[in-house]
Image 1 (cartoon, rainbow, N blue to C red):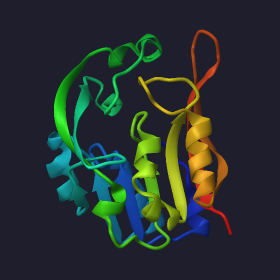
Image 2 (cartoon, rainbow, N blue to C red):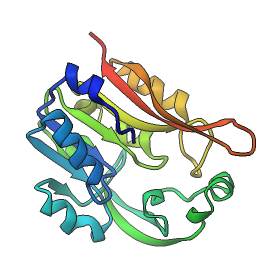
Image 3 (cartoon, rainbow, N blue to C red):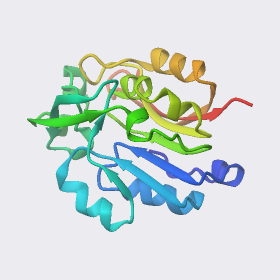
Image 4 (cartoon, rainbow, N blue to C red):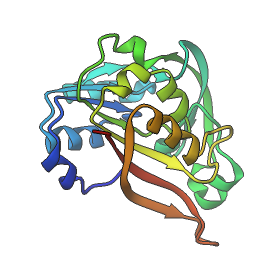
Length: 206
């Protein structure tokens, strides 16, 4: 995710951060300090990160967010940040060879609306879920619709099998009352220059 969000921090002071796909919590800690957030909920299914997240004072939800509760296969990638509920595609392997290997395990899934049944008002939501953005939003419409800011990674080409691309995710956020404020970072295929994915900022429409 982007490391220059001062323009957003000057305009908004959310009290709650919802970090979806928290990993070890380093970026969540950056957002907490930048925006002066008082309360942080982190969602991360990988057990190895739990102690690190707790040590940072976060409220830890050890589940993978989805559009329904249950159990699902999880692909733990040797390149940790690429771990996902979805397997990677050939495009991803070609562009990022370090993502080629992963191990399969089972994780608990949950809906964001069930995990936070009283949706925080005017929150900051960060979603970095490696291709699973749309089901997460669909399972958390009540929570997402009350946010001030959504920071999200979205793809223009499929890096994960079955993932929804930019247009579908954008349409869902638009329907929930958000407008695209800008691309924070964009990444392209080295061989062709065609865009692969981008880090995007959405703000609630006034």
